[in-house]
Image (cartoon, rainbow, N blue to C red; front, top):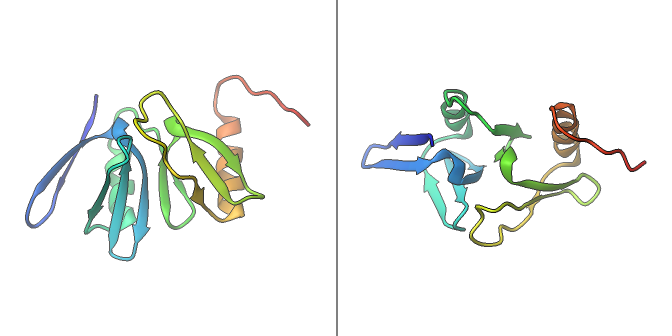
Amino acid sequence: MEWLKIKTSTELVRVRADEIVYVRADGNYSDLMLTSGRKLTLTFQLHFFDECFKQLQNNTFVRVGRSYIVNKRYIFVINPKRRQLSFTGQLLKTDIEPLDIAPDALKTLMDELVKEKGGTADGK
């Protein structure tokens, strides 16, 4: 179990990496959506979290477009036509709303995941 330790000017936030479903950019802030459905807003831009995740031994996070970093463990459905990325997983303690993401970013994510090791079935 790996922990992110995020030190701000006023506090230290410790969160297990596997409890992060995604990180969403919001200007100079970022929202972390956790498996519990809780949202943490921190005063860091998205590139800060990019660097944090790169330091993890088991990095399961991937950048999706300009606004999101998602945990691949929780990706359920990628649908570029509907502009939707949906999540599921045993560790999710609540429903997480699908994200509305640009089709090009979803297509890139889909291609990347298809290239990873594992069973792939093509229903064309």
